[in-house]
Image 1 (cartoon, rainbow, N blue to C red):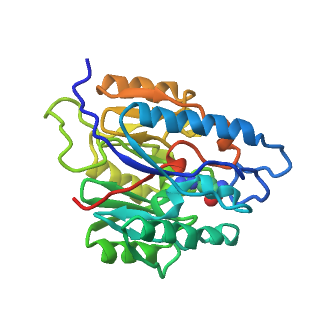
Image 2 (cartoon, rainbow, N blue to C red; image 1 turned 45 degrees about the horizontal axis):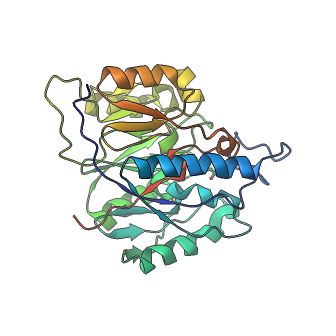
Length: 283
Ligand code: ARG
């Protein structure tokens, strides 16, 4: 029996109606390889329905033709306490998504902050308790880490990614207990994050070891199938069915792995977390 308690979440997702791989901005993308949009839609729908069936609220943003990566809503912004910081993509191919996401936040009652620095939202910013873990090395800049700290008035811990396959922080770290005060018992093997050690430089690995001594360290094999690109409600952890070792580690700690296959969306270099943006309203 799991001792963990699921907390209802509110997520923003985008139906992959225009999904395809027409350019290459990460090593997973192979434009010459055909994609199957119907299959992407079916897999995405399963993820959507799985969230809903477990009591989570899912909001939708309309997909825009010509923006095939818009399905990866984690890159649409970063929200805390009813405030949404928009994004400024490093890659030109995705800059057309910036305004539609900011418009969505504004239309849904968020106080929107337009960003100055280059950063790709919750792809590189992960909230753990009251701390933001922030990734750099491939997409978001170090300057953006200062900006996100100022905008939200929260502590930011910068981490450097070194493996091009894991170009966003959410491909190398999974937050398991997203909000502070999540019920964990001392000595229960509590782990607030899971991560892929080899995705980081030595200094960042030391920071992670020091700050999260109980974290789950995931194998290279599970990392390579995008196992870390997972969403969690504090009990259910939505992960790739191919990350079998990670699933076992989660079970040992009292979490409930919920496998959802997004293999078609992996052709664009994204998985479960990439397709999921957490909407944090006023606390
Ligand atoms: N093709 C997209 C890109 O390279 C995939 C984004 C994945 N998103 C994420 N949060 N890791 O930008």
